[in-house]
Length: 246
Ligand code: 13P
Image (cartoon, rainbow, N blue to C red):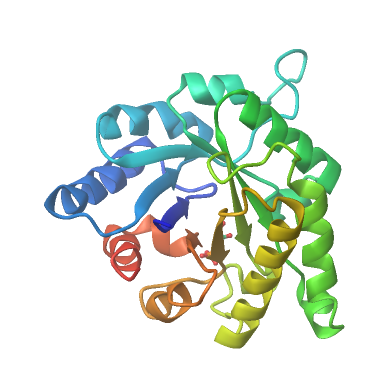
């Protein structure tokens, strides 16, 4: 399974910064294949400028969210069809920042994944526990609930990627131990194998304070098939170093 390294730029980069960032990545990528698929997820308004720069290159474009419905009276929202039309191949759904900031539930997240699939977008579905949940030993049950309720029945290895992002590891510089990452990823794999016995080759990403210093060890864990990178995806050298760590 070819790993996927995805950059979630979150609410960062103005147009000139976004195009410079992706142009820098393309220069590296033109020199060699790092051995992984590369995905960048800029903010909505920079999708088109970035799409124009990466056109024809092996770097794929994704968005950070979509609305759960196909179209209509939803002021300020963006549909999956618009994302596909803008050149996206993927969309992140259920990121913990959206679950927290916008009170997104598993039932909303699964609807977003379904509408993404209907528009030929790969859904990168995020799950993960808070620090309080980790400390009260609820990690596996939280992950089980989120995976079973946020991943739609129509999921396949082609249209779905699942990202484990412990909330307490995001943007904090803290990461779980390798054993903790391994435990959750093995558990997610087992859940998916049980539910989709004939198509469980989903890529499972780890996300949360991944950086050039810890990427190699994390990406070597069984059932870690790539990374979802926040802060370190905003610098060409750091994101490229993570890509070449696979
Ligand atoms: P950081 O890499 O900044 O911790 O963010 C991870 C993340 O939330 C990616 O979606």
